[in-house]
Length: 290
Image 1 (cartoon, rainbow, N blue to C red):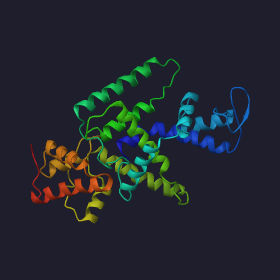
Image 2 (cartoon, rainbow, N blue to C red):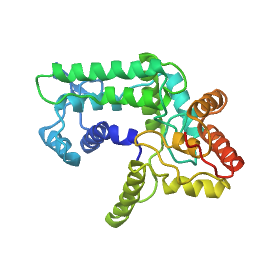
Image 3 (spheres, rainbow, N blue to C red):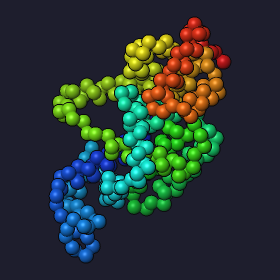
Image 4 (cartoon, rainbow, N blue to C red):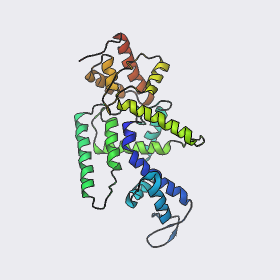
């Protein structure tokens, strides 16, 4: 479970609840403000029972305004360039674990100063929206997603608010384009085991340890990596790995930005791993202490 997954939990729960409502209503007709029924309406009529079901989904009471925001997101039409980029990233990331961004597993590296300022701006707007709300709960999901987008991509190049929003749109489009799992639903015991594995990885990340899933992939790829490296959560593990391999922070980030200009997805991550492995091997396991 990545830091981005934790931060976006609330938004995912909201969308899931609304999706459940939409599914339960099936082909029920909709009614617009004039009372006309039919398929051309742009306003969805949700029954009281459906509202209660959505509010209780996941044990979170979701205000109507936030449910409507999530419903609008589900029905959003993305521009073709966003869909093309989303599909390209999905194609580039097949078969590897990590983030669904263009650089899987490399989120939360130190941001460029311009992007630190952008994060501060987004947080300021989020706090202002929260303070201005006098009706209770505020939908902060859009702000959280913007912050996550900057944290994922803002180490590579300066970003504007428009850049961050584009990254959010691509991420949402990727989720929509990802085919639904064809496997049979997990049993309660199987789901519990899956959740246990996910939590174990999160606890390893929280403790600053290299997750076992990464170690397994490195072993399979024949890489020599400093698996005992540690880092400070939620910072990416990569700076800890680089330091343990004898690579300074500035050199590592410079190399990462250089590679990011020529590689994406799996290829990029594999080049980063290869760079760290080669330096670690060359240093005979000698780590940087300063």
